Image (cartoon, rainbow, N blue to C red):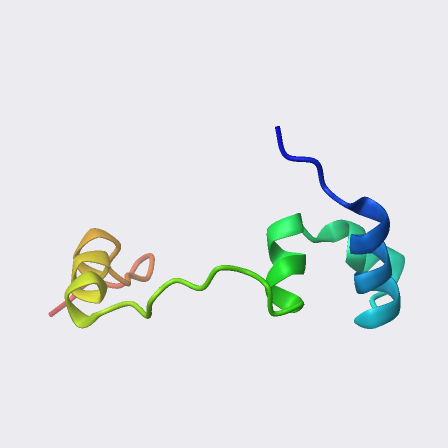
Amino acid sequence: MSVLDWPGMMRAGLVGLRLAPDQFWALTPAELMVMLGKGASAPPMGRHRLEEMLAAFPDTRKGVQDD
């Protein structure tokens, strides 16, 4: 079980990042860690993965048909 350091996270968000309380509480711990530069970074998406996603989720507009 992982225990979060809420006082430390609140200090970092409210004091260090100068977030308003509602902004701080709207974040997930993972989002806060990324904002603090401490989150794990994923490698950038490659062309192959982008093409897979475009095929799976094509851009379409309602009521408009391709010619």
